[in-house]
Length: 317
Length: 121
Length: 167
Image (cartoon, rainbow over all chains, first blue to last red):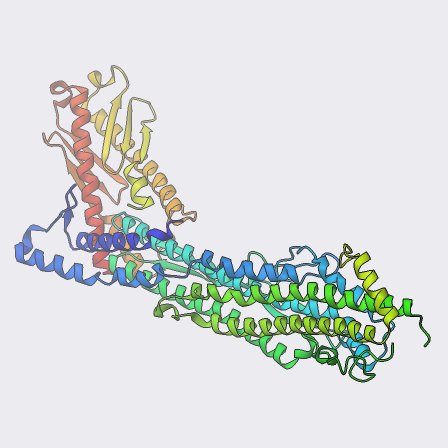
């Protein structure tokens, strides 16, 4: 991986393009890298051609520069770790599993203490006690599992984003290397064909994350994850593959421009998939909030004067 | 009264233990989850990129952040509900104890006797 | 420098005539080194040398193209063993003109002239009396000069040809 050298590669591409274009016009480079014009065009004519050719390729570096400042996949690591830490807090039940990656998440046994809370209320039958047991204690595991799922979906979104930039950086690097190869190949006899696989186009995979609503109904939300990490994903997209060919320096550079533009558009499409998944999950949660968080128990608002009440408290001792 | 003061004292102890120890411990887990989810805000600048690449933050960041905020609210609300309910249960234990001195004594005796009991015991 | 340029600069290709009398090495892009089986040079004729050098050039260039495609495959990270059959009118035109292209090289002492059409039909001329007048080391050096000039000429013409057809 030499992504960090992308701008050095861009400078090399510019230099090789100028050299290739001048050679096509009959210039010969000496071993010190200086171009010598064909004898029939005169000194001024030669300088004009050199200047014009340099100008022709002067935007090569600016073509690459946005791609040299792409997000660093590792910079998302902290956010990803935050989500994983939250998942560990919310992890309940037998062998809890990250729905996106299929990896186990150790259960947090502190949450089991809710069983003891239910037991403590067994003999209290005031209305607020009963509704707390019914609406809060009993479905506690379902709420917690659903919340765990939401955080897993957030983590999947971040991992998908990381995967996009990991691939995009590798693809930008490959575009630069292929351009250098194509330009170095220029003077050789063979035709100049190469293929670019835009792996970034297969970064984000859709995966279902199930939540329980209304106590029993199981709903699958559409989540996303890094294609290299997801389990049971829908068949991943084939990464787009483009055939390039360029027999002149101008043609190679125009192919590079096209490749970079494909790269940008593939990045956009992949990020859109994350955006759509997050938007639809978010809308679902907003519309079905009661499946993800219990209504505030009446008991939570009890005061010294109401806590023994048969309606708003625990009722008769 | 159908229940002896000793029985009531034991039940009040269970209420007190659930309210004072169990629910706050559970609430703490949700509060931590909420704070990790909310804390991810510090990493959001990772999305930055030049304007040529749908800058400054691209299409994914906005929807991810608003979903993240929604999940944060849910976790925070759960933690608050657990905390407040815990307070209500220990309040209840105190209020009922005021009505029965013998039960109150039993409650205090159990608190003292079980000082080392863990929430999952 | 990219992978391809690096591989082409550091390429070593070897070949020998079927009878083993002359061996050749291509180092890098243009450096050709000849060696003779012991005793062969002093008793051969200029015509013998011309025939064998033409055979050797064919073998050496074939080896060079294999090494070239291996380097290209490495640089593009995909297996490339040759080029597709030309289909577009421009590709057909390029292939035809390239096959007809004649490259030449000559030693500084004018004793040796090398030319090739389409990098396939080699023609070597060795001035009469050469074997008697210079030893095998001087001869090998002269062939090296002619070969290097030919290879440079070929590539310069290819660059201009590509410009003409595709530019």
